[in-house]
Amino acid sequence: MEPFDIEVGTVNYAVFPEGNDTYTIFKNGTEYIQIQKDTSTIWLKLDYKTDMPIFEENEEVNLIGQQIEAYKQLPQNEEEEEEDLD
Image (tube, rainbow, N blue to C red; front, side):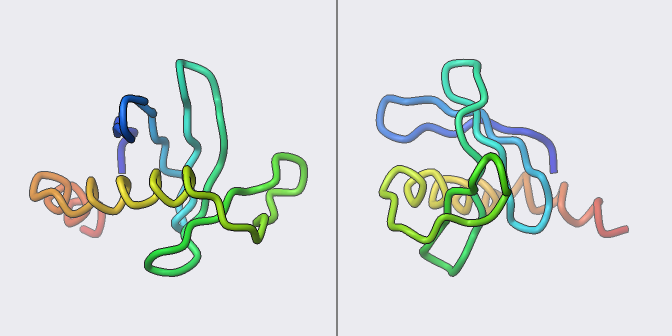
């Protein structure tokens, strides 16, 4: 999957997929956080030093994750994912 942009409220984020439901998020042109999907509704921030998930609720991380899921459901992105499977 190629990098893409999402919007949460008035903030734009650049999303770079890393594989295994892990994403590097850029905010205002600089690396901001890494997040990983935990469950269908919970996303976790990853610790920069250890790459281990930080198990605490973070509303911003969950909102970013929801927008990632919404982006992945768009019809043009399903075609890209099918091409990756070939």
